[in-house]
Length: 169
Image (cartoon, rainbow, N blue to C red; front, side, top):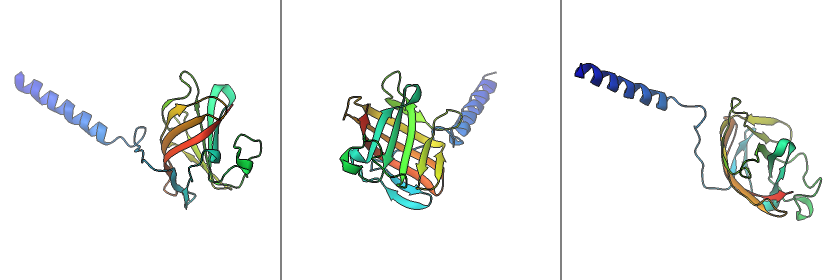
C-alpha cells in the first residue's frame, strides 16, 4: 500500500509539472524595464517616453482608456481634441477602472476580454497574448498613469516596456 501511495504521489507531481511547463497562453509574459518598444507591423518602434505623447481618460462603462503615441501632442497638451494625427504609430487599450482606479495586472486573451491594439497608421494589430499592468493612477487633471506591458499580436507586432501618460478627466 505504501508503494502504491508513493507511486501515485510521484505521478501527480509529474503531471502537475508537465501542465506547468506547457503553459503558453495566459500568464506567459515577462516585463522588461525599458521605455515601451518593439515592432508594429514589422517596423521597429520605440516610444520616446514623454507624458504628452499619450493620454488616459475615462471611457464608456467606467473603463480607463489609454492611448500611447510616438509623437508629442500638438501644443504640448495631450488632452486637447485633435492633438494627434491619425497616421501616427499608436498603442491603445482599455481596462476596468473599478474597483481601485484600474491599478492591477490584466492578462490578455479573447477569453479574458482584454487585448491591446497596435496601430501603424494603416492597420490595427490585435494583441491577445501577454499582459498589461497599471502601476499607479493619479486621476486628477494633469495627473499621471504609469504602467508596463508585454504584448504580442504576431511575430511582427510585439511591444514590451514601461509607459507614463497624462490623465485627462
